[in-house]
Length: 424
Image 1 (spheres, helix red, strand yellow):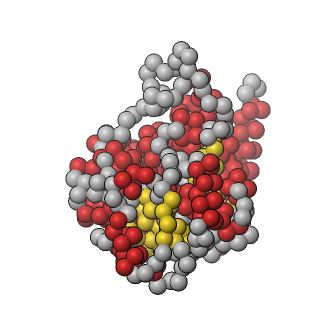
Image 2 (cartoon, one colour; image 1 turned 180 degrees about the vertical axis):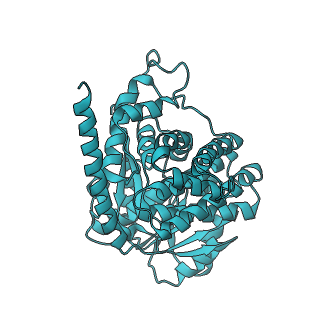
Image 3 (cartoon, rainbow, N blue to C red; image 1 turned 60 degrees about the vertical axis):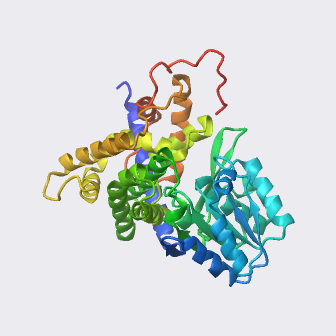
């Protein structure tokens, strides 16, 4: 029968990968992943500064970006360090996507200044860069040599975190994502020892975030929670964290976008990001992230924005395999009750995500995306998901192409005249 070999091959592939992922999930569940000490609330970053001064570090490296410095967000923390007698230096050259050349400069700066501890201060890129700097400096290895899982013999330098956005959850996770600008790729470095020892969730550092950044990072946290909840590695603990995160995002993201100075909403969003981080550290993510990584590597689309745009489309593909799980998410999101039919609740949850995205002004399409790039993007996304993530249902590259086309900007189906595309 025409097409039967491909169908059989797809079944064998799905069954084989599913079995392997379940086995990997058992191993992951046994890993001793540390839980950081969390300081939560207004001015908690100052309390972290006071605590660090008592830990006996010779010199602390603060990894951040120029915008954080320009906005004066560092001043309270560094003043707290100074008052307590701690010595520090600042590396503020981190740029979007934490490019390898920038990370390498940070490693050299860390070693040259004799730093023995690292504080990540900022959004996702400074967080990721700080983790890799601490890991690479301790192991005397280049970032590319650390890509993958547990590639460092030694633990990173003592690592602490102060997020200035509520999205990535990197302050509680085992991974760092950096980018290779030459190859147009994002690379993951993972080790349980990359979890910061302490983190401060200080809403006062987030009050000046523009609504667009608040929206994208908040939807990033939502994506982490949802993908952790529907994947094969979910546990009772990760379910609790994911459901709590979904409820907090759905209740507070609109408020945080509308009134950026609302400290209660900001604090709850920072907790949502951390809870989602706890969930996906154990349960992992899925196709939304796999596709978003390709879009970020090729077009430099902000990760949270890519996740936000893709989430409902991926969920519609997966819905038949996770209807009951989506129904539970609907209840957590406050858009239904447990007495309603799961199929109705699942549909309503996906629709509620789309409404939330509209309300916080997330675009529906990506104007950078080009039709000619989609097959290569889909192949790369499927490879990433197949080899890394415990997805509940497998996509073929053709399925993935269909999902990606949902976010294609009208008029972008052909490469723009004179446009140069990045190599896959």
